[in-house]
Image (cartoon, one colour):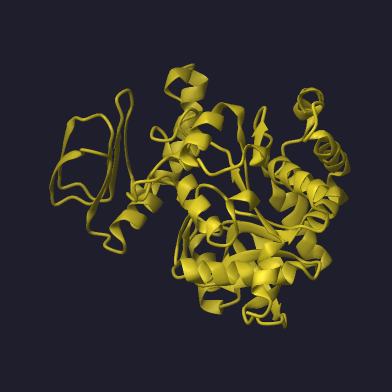
Length: 373
């Protein structure tokens, strides 16, 4: 792609590493959130996989991680190459607008005109060359003043993902997969998802955003002016001794709002949102059914197993077993089973009900059993 080296030299990756991943409880917990876990059997965490992916596009000095204060030591242990100035610690969770917006504001203050890209720390992507090509095309498009997302060409009927309805193609210097964004669509029911797949007009929404930092913040300010004013104020003192006092004064009052509502949907309505249609494998690993699919690699009748030194006896069973307790687990004639066995919690459900694990977590919270969260 023309000028791709020059373009990526001006690019900065942002990795938001937050959220517990409650649909993956009891494996994912407050002190061991989803992004710090190995959910693919690769031997390293999803966060480390994301770092390696971004390091193929830019240097470690141009990758920023936004995470909670309590996860600082774990993040540093998993990412020994990250510069200290590139770890942004949140006092508490404030959703993606604050996390991504703060990182963008800091980077814009340090390097006016910088192009930033936000890539979740807890997604699985396979096909590194296709990923690099899509991001490079998105950077080129973002440099023209658009906000760009990367949509994944759907391969099956899925009700677990949001969708992007793409519009007319956009001519770029070397790209061939760029489109206007007509709208964003929430998770559909199965008949609607089938129509989306058959139409060819829809892409899975992978939640990746690439933009000039100033364009991203200006768009966010259209709906949340006070939030952006606070974030830019923090950015001005971030690299000074005034940082800690400013955070304590400002952070608690920031609104909790997803970037979909402050940037993606309003930008699409304004006609400044674009997407790159990509063809790499992607999954947000939203529940144990997704984990089973990733581990079985298209063999739905297999029993997927996750966990070091797992002891499993299985007869005519399929689904997934996550073994963390060291106990022997025996399954006989179980279809689409989900078993998560940890030292203090046992979860048993089915792949069809995997999304409902979050409601169990809510029940646990109300019961006062906070020690298992």
